[in-house]
Amino acid sequence: MPAVRRRRFRRGVIAAFVLALGFTPAAAHAQQPTAPRAQVAPGSWRRFWAGFVTSIASHEGGHLAAALLQGARPTFGLDHGRPTVYSGIDPELHPHRQFVFSSAGLNVQTLLDEAILDDPHHGGGSFQRGVLFGGIATTAFYLTLGRTGSVSDVAFMRRTSGLSSAQIALIYGGVAALHIVRIERDGRFADFFVHPAPRGGLRVGVDLR
Image (cartoon, rainbow, N blue to C red; front, side, top):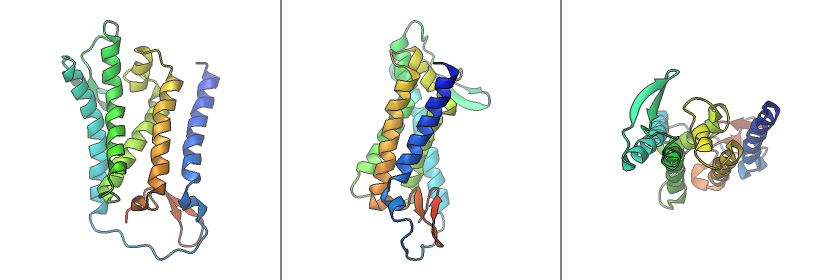
C-alpha cells in the first residue's frame, strides 16, 4: 500500500474511533445538568490496572496457548525493549499455523471483552472497565503504530493469509468500534469514555465510579 494511502487509512481509522465515541447517549446529553459525581472508591485505580494487566496477559497467553496446542515450542524475548512471545513456528513452512498464533492474542481479548459485555449479572466495576479498556487500547495500537514491525501481529497475519492489512484492521477495528458503542449504551458502564464535565462540555477518558 503506498505511503499516502497508508496515512489516509490511519487517519480514517482514528476518525472512525472518534465518531464511535461521539455518537453515543453520553455525548448527546453532554450539556444537560447532572448530579454531583460520586467519589472514586479507594482501590478503584488498583482494580482498574489489575483488569488492564489481565487483558494484556490474556493477549500474550493466547499466543502462548496457540503455539503449544499446535506442538510448537514458543520462547520469550525482547523486541526493542518490548516483551514478546515468539511462536517457534516457521511461517514459510506453516503459514496457517503462524496465522493462528498471530491472531490468537487479539482473538482472546475480543472474546474476554464479549464475555464481560454479555454477562447480565455482573459488570461495571473498576476491574471489568480495566479489562475492556485493555482490549480496546490493544486493538487501537495494532491498527495504528503496531501495524508494521518485525513482530507485528497484523504484519504476520497479512503475510500468512490472503488478507490485506486494511482488511485485518477493518475486522478487528469494527469489532472494537461495536464494543465502544455497546459500552456507552450499557448503563453498567455509564460515562466510561465520554461524560459531562461539572461546568459544561465534555470530559474524555476512562471514568472510575
